[in-house]
Image 1 (cartoon, helix red, strand yellow):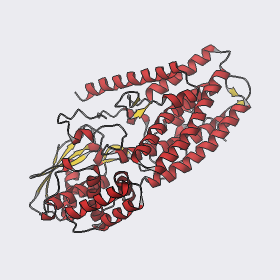
Image 2 (cartoon, helix red, strand yellow):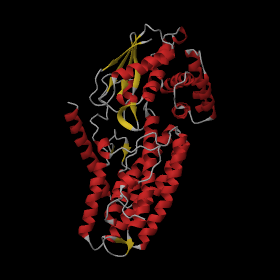
Image 3 (spheres, rainbow over the protein chains, first blue to last red):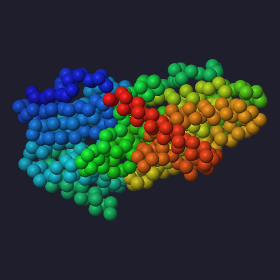
Image 4 (spheres, rainbow over the protein chains, first blue to last red):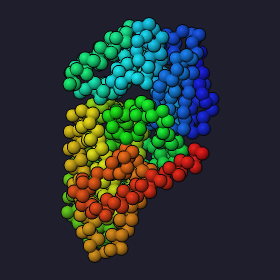
Length: 184
Length: 281
């Protein structure tokens, strides 16, 4: 079982339960197949309803999450299990990729273009769907089209990424270059 | 059929979740990000403006579009109730028949907007009811004075709709989303007409009653300030929803009236900033 910790342990602006977040992220880390002795820390900024998320560090693995990313859009300030699983899967699949030699040449997250970031998200969320998590494919398609173009080339690229497994950074980046060429 | 239907009796199926306005307004969390000292990509991607280079822009647009969708439902309900709630006549609680005709036309427009919004939401990957619904538009449509009702709904809230549709249209254009741009452009054209109806009826029904006109304009000011959403709508470079001056002028607003809305928005923004400073220490 993955070694997950969450901060803060008590929330004052939202009604999140740190133990519940720990349980959900642990479940997802195991689904993703991260090593069981790998520490994973989730730092939540509960003071904002915004929803930015990022892998802040790989050693130790640290996910930084703005509170809005974990909340229930129908009931603000409450935790959404689906959102926690969705965010954790997207970020932890990326962590898993980065720990593999196939992604050794991937630029740091801060250096990725939006198109590369979103393509990687699609690759991650497609695998999360096949692992049995409830995700929204149409939402990811809309994100992808915004970054890769509203055209047939982008849609076909999306489907390839969504169905992919065992990709390398070079393959993922090649798809980004393909859609970029189609936009020019 | 009941007259003056209260908001809690609006019919919705199980997909919808209602969020009381007090709960939305009472959120103590900050809705803006502190400046990123690094000035790097995190800052570039972290703003609240609805522009394609924002990392969360597609989700921002999805949430905003869902808000528009439920607003369209309520605008249909509000205009429909205005047709029914008032008898034809010249009293303060009555309306000319032609006003009812305008409201009937607006119902037709809003029905079309609901259908467009459903298709557009599907295109954007949004499920109906994915976000909570606030009923503030319909609540403004419950005012027992038809002039205040039209001023609050058609001038203030449909005016806000002009700003939102224009912002979304510009976003669709910049993002290269032809469906979003096209849909927003068509709905925007109708909103200009709805606001113009509000402006025209305000002036006609209060032509000989300056006190009633002032009450209506005061109601509009309250609604405008409240729904500047803490200054989210404004003319600042960092305003996520831009005040659409040109379209407002087409809808019967004078330059002074638009200036006043801009000032109210700036005031709301300053008050929100002070409130957040107090609550988050």
